[in-house]
Image 1 (cartoon, rainbow, N blue to C red):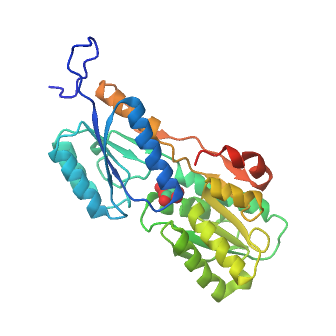
Image 2: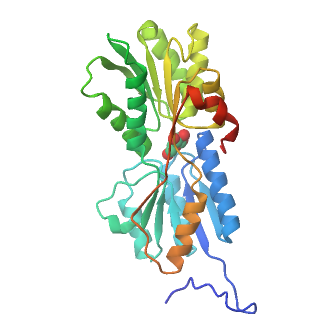
Image 3: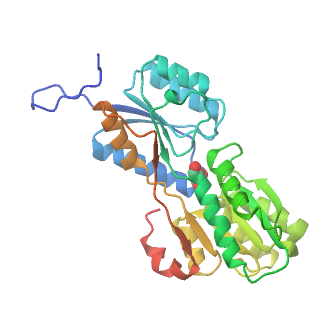
Length: 308
Ligand code: AHR
C-alpha cells in the first residue's frame, strides 16, 4: 500500500508529514551554501520534514547517509551526487526498498535510468558553451594566439565534465584559442588561488583568459593575479560560472568580465517534485533550471539584486 498518504480532509485526521532524506555533497562553495539554505527553507514552507546529511565531498559518506535513510524508511530520497560514477549498486538498494529517488544538481552515470524518477538541475554543458561563446566575442579583435587557463571543479563531477566539454566544443574549430593548462581546483577559493599562482609562475605573460568553473575559484584567482602584479579583467580576461553576489561585485569593479549563471535555488523545485511524487503524479525525467549570462555592462545594475 501507499505508506505516504497524507490526510488533510479533516482537522482530526492524523497528519503525518512527508519525510525527505537529502544527501548533500558538501559545503565547498557559496553556491552550495545557497543551495542548502534554499532546500531547508523550501522544506519548511512546504511542510516537508527534511533529514539533511552533508557528505563533505565524500561519496562513501553519501552512501552511509542513504543507507540510514533506507533503514529509517523515509518517504523520498534526494541526492546531490559529488561525482557521476559508482552509483548503480546503491541506487539498486534504494529501488529495492521501494523509495522514490530524485537526483538534484549533479547527475549520476547509471545504465538503468529507471533507478531514479527525475533529475532536477542546470544544463552544465550549455553553461560551458555560453562561457566559450562569450570569450570568442570578447577576443574577436585579437588575431594571434589566445592563451587560456582553466580552473576545473571537482574531478569527475557533472559540472566539471560538462562545463569543460561545452567550452571545448565551442572553440574546437578555432585553432588560435589554446588551452595552455587545465587543473582541478575543487570549486574552492583556496585551491583556485593556489592553482592560479602556479599557472602564473609557469606562464604568467602568456595567459590571456582565465576560465573558472565557479566563482569561488575565480575570486581566489583574482587575489593571485593581483599579488603577481597583473590586472584581473584587463591583463587577463576572466570568465566564471555561478553568479554569486561576490562575483557580481568584482564584475562591477571590472575584475571579472563575464559570469555564466548557475542557479542554486533548487529548493522549491525539489519540494514540488516531492509533493507531486507522493500524490502519485508522474514527473518529467529531466527538469532544467532557466539561466542567463551576465557581463560587465550589466554588473552594476544587477549587483544588489542577486539572491545568493
Ligand atoms: O554543481 C554545481 C557546482 O557546485 C557549482 O557551480 C559550484 O559552485 C558548486 O560547488
